[in-house]
Structure formats: C-alpha cells, structure tokens
Length: 321
Image (cartoon, rainbow, N blue to C red):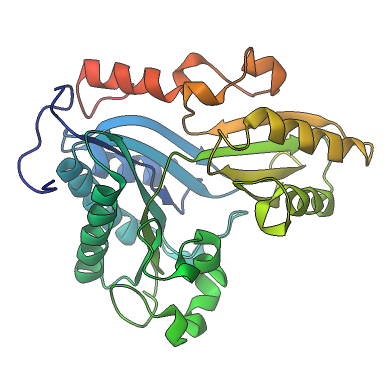
C-alpha cells in the first residue's frame, strides 16, 4: 500500500490506521511536555490517545493513532520540537535513554500489515536523519541486523557512551551521521506488535532487590517469555520499582508477571505496594477486576486501548480523549 498521499478520514472504514507510541526524554518540565505534544497534534490529523509523564524516569510516553501519512507528519513535527527543547547533556532520570526522542515504534492497527509499518519506519528514519542530522537505528521488525532487533542492545551505553559506541562498525547507524547529535543523541525507529509498559512498585527502598527481581523475571536472563525488566528507584516516592515491557501479553500475561514479582518479593519479606500501566492496554490483556487483582494505581476504563481509540475517532482527530 502507498503510505503517502492525502489521508482519508480516520473514522472511515476504508482508512488504514497505525498507532505510534513515541517516548521522549522529558517528564518534569510540564510546559516542555505540553509544547512537544502540541507539536505532534497541532495539525489535527491524528488522534491523541494518551500522554503519560514520569518525573522519576524523566520521560514521557505519547500515544497517537491515524492514517500512516498523518502519523508520519505528526512524528516529524514532534521530533523537531524535542530536538529544539531537550538537551541530554542536562538530562538525568531513572530510565535508560540515548535520545531526546528515545524510541518511536509503529504498530499496525487496521488496514495495513507489519510490512507496511516496516516501510513507514524506514521512510521516517531517513527523513529524521536528513532533517536533524540524527543517527537513526531501525529496531524490532524493521531491524537491518539481528543485533538491532532488541532496543535494549541498541540503547546500551546511553547518551553518554554513544560517542564511543557509534564508532564501532557494528553500530553504524542505519541513517544519519556516524556521530552523536550533540544535544539530541540518537533515535530508534521500529515496527512491532502491541507492547504493554507495566511497572510494579515494592513496599521497599531496596533497589538491589528490585534489580534482582527484574533479572529473575526477564526473558534474557532465563525468566518469563516476552518480558523485559529492570529495577529503578523512584526517588520522589522513596520506593524501588520493577519496570517492565511486555512484548506479547498472550504468551505471558500481566497476572503471571504480577504473581511472580509478588512471590519473589515475599521471599525477602517485602510486599507489593501497587502496580501501574503506562499508556494504554488492550482489553484482552486485563484479568477480571484488574484494579484489585493487579493492585493497579489510578486505573479506569479510559486506560483500555479500544475504548480510547473508539472515543477519539468518534470525536475527531487532534482532540484530547
């Protein structure tokens, strides 16, 4: 399918829909977050589904959906706003990052294939490199080499270590210069299935315990399939967190992860304080009575992806749900 051209109305049955969940490295300066979100949605051609900012991670996650051409335009505007407003030399936060815009995933929702999203990722990556001089890495289904499928492998070294890493021929960017942008770093652009960002907060400030639990549950260490995890400290709350990305909730469910983390913490005499879903979650991923069974903070039906998308499309693009 052609990814360029005039977008059809997003509510039209014939209109293809792609979701994107860009993560950018600012979660503390509200005015900056709002300016970046406005840059992405100001054209009125994409549906804004969610914005989540975390001051401890110093990171924001924006969820958009729309016609592929409209989503590409929105992302180009958003990246320009991030490059202008975020200087990673002054950035500190609990979440690993290598870029002002750290990662841009594209997810097929309706009327397009994963191959279409791969093509869109490559077109967008080339455009961002050309416009901003950003080194761009393609990841997940868009990856050009096996070592680039996993975002965590690309991001290793983070912004501070990338000046050395990028000189290694193994880590030559897919697009852009062989040098890190001085303030905006690098960006990863990819195509993937739906990912759930899920965090579990321990009733403890023991960061080593959170890291041990994360190492036990993540797939790369022999833990649960389709789970990526790390331990981080939430300084504002004084608690340690097991922060996870779940790449296939049908293989490993939220309930399975929650129960495993709870049991591992209990072995050390620590209870679960709460858990949280960052961004949106598919309805099929939730157990019955999710707020109780997962001890979810601030959970409501508005967190369900299908409900949010339906509401946004009914109201028109560019509006807050």
